[in-house]
Length: 442
Image (cartoon, rainbow, N blue to C red; front, side, top):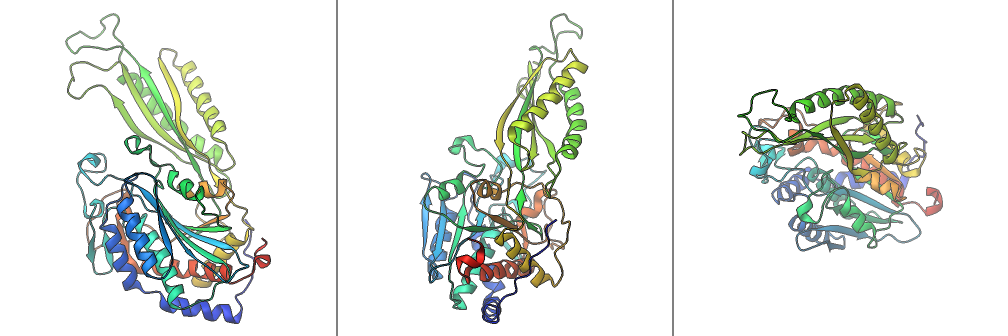
């Protein structure tokens, strides 16, 4: 693993950094996060949240614009000009939430709608609850607070500072909303004038990542015949699709950890999970279905192409077919996003590590936790933008309110947890945006 290159801040840069840190306001951050969480923004329908952020950013002194993609969704880009001759640094986070926030989420999201999954904000002391309050809205709010502190401290920037928030950051595909998801929003911004030299994307976990996985979506269809509950078992011509699908599920569950082990490298651990099943008609239980569909997601290491992952799944399916020739099934890859990586020696990665070390008062570890989460950072890197992922400890611990199991932490934010991350990213901003381009290897 690459070690951190020591490039200390000058005395003037350190003064600017300390001045900006002193302007970071947790109460202002908490208020913004509450107000933003209170604006529902499911993938493909982020217009209200994005318009709110556009106005907020403009009011704090950073010229900003709303970039519509259709009538109900769009993205935000703020731009703070430097004196010239420096790099353009983008601070980025998605703005869409992973669930719809209505009855369609249940029972699939859990037995009931807890406080952290409601599309409305609740404040309990220094905790903000509500759908997406931690991921993504704590990221949006924290990055905004960083810029607000820089403006308040009147730090003179050499390079330009951009602040971008886009729809489609969640790993979903919402067909009824123009197939929103899978990083469509950040691609829209990049195609319309957002052209940074470097990017910091804020996401959970208190590490500095230079790469992230992509993902591959697969569907296996196990075939049988349409049946009828009134027909005795063993009737010629009837073949269940559901019972053989259980055999496929067990075989797939045994193969997925082997896939992970085979494809782990760098700092990426590409896990795979069976995520959904579909078969038959709940309103026609007397008629067993002729098809059962199994859906699963495997993460894709940046050093492995989606095509190679598809070949690995094909190999698994062929082997399973040979072992169980009576299985009648077919499969397809119906979605993919390639992983992305940035050279760990790149300026922005090293700057992020310096910020981490400065705040943590420790050397950055040689082996941080391996990463399996997919974000827009993979797309930014693939499109040629050196990108560092920085974050905070997640999920928050000690919630005074009960929250949903599993990913419930995506809707529960403890404000003090965000402040060290804000200082780390602020360090990278000062380190990067107050230097001429030639000092940044540009």
